[in-house]
Image 1: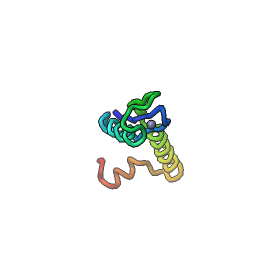
Image 2: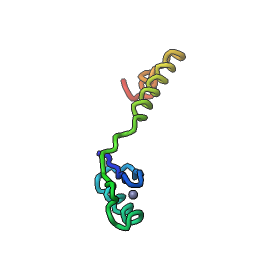
Image 3: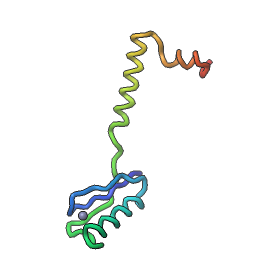
Image 4: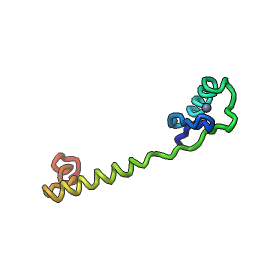
Length: 88
Ligand SMILES: [Zn+2]
């Protein structure tokens, strides 16, 4: 699950990390550099970072492109796979 550190005092967010530990490292580094090692007065937190919404959009775009190629050329992805011998 992706995690990200956010400092409410500076209104800054760290990079997205695959684990809470990576975001905790950002928290420690930021507290040392910006707040003298202390926690910022309004607080900071490590929270869940939702995945990018671009992933599904890219998949939809690729799917639309394959449909367009099929409409224009009559060649479908399974035809190409059959020509390459990947499927019988
Ligand atoms: Zn800060």
